[in-house]
Structures are given as C-alpha cells and as structure tokens.
Image (cartoon, rainbow, N blue to C red; front, side, top):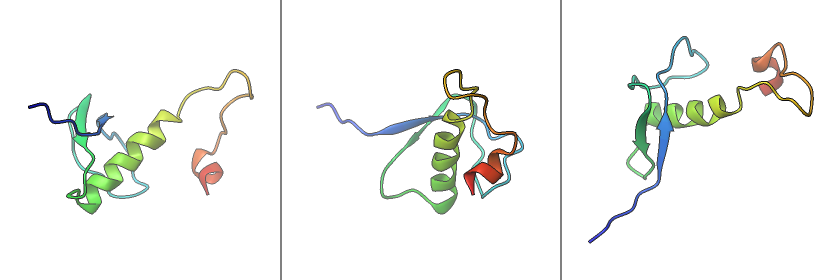
Length: 71
C-alpha cells in the first residue's frame, strides 16, 4: 500500500526572528498534517515566505525593507 502525505521542503532558520520556528536541518521535509505544533506551523510559514526571498527581474528589485513590505 502506498501512503501519500503533503510535505514542505524546509531550510535551516538562520537569524529568523519574526515568529517562533523549529530547529531543523537544511533541506529537510516537514509533513503537513493536523498534528503540527505552533512552532512547526511557524516553520512551514517561514519556509513559504523564504520562497519569496529572491531578486525579481521583471517587476524591479526586491524591497529594501522586506518586513515593512510584508506589513
């Protein structure tokens, strides 16, 4: 039998202080299910937010104050 679960590839959180996140090894996987703790949910949101941390080419440069842009 094959069981499938959604996962999120996560990276180690270096100097991330916007909300609590868990300690994980780089390039690990976090299973997304209803049993996640608040810290694991924070880690998942951090992982999604980190995907948006890149230099845009078409719409101009990324904001110099990403936290301000986030709020």
